[in-house]
Length: 171
Image (cartoon, rainbow, N blue to C red; front, side, top):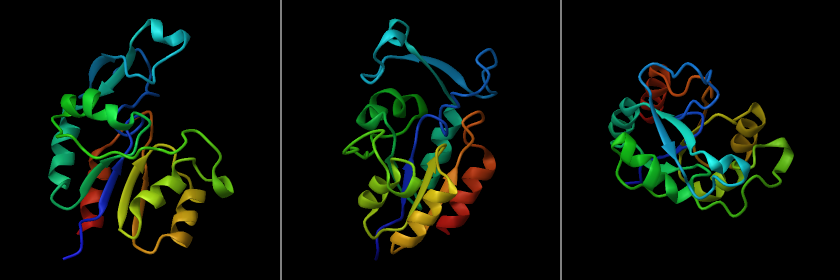
């Protein structure tokens, strides 16, 4: 039996709708103050505000029957310390980006090339707020298996239709 497809999960945007109006926490979300190691510079005087919806953990665990869940975020392994426990998720594997925010081929998002390297020949679904049509075309041309690239609005985060699309695609 072939392995399950990967579900590659970005944090900021899909799980943390960071671009929502600061004075209006989205419904169902809880505010968390966090200090991951990447939170440095002048802004580090205050902890990072992260909005998380605990229902997303339940939804992702339900998808774990059909997918292997993997963090695909700049939080890297720290997502297991800061994000996963707030959502009730077990420790997940994560992509250790060779270079973050670096050059990307043909106008693609910097993560895209590394997503393909990580996936190898496995099918995958990827949820991120920075996916564009250029990324979809790049993956379609270079990835030997099926792939679903689902752009999530960073002002809203994951919604019911996104979870339904992921479940339908895996089926």
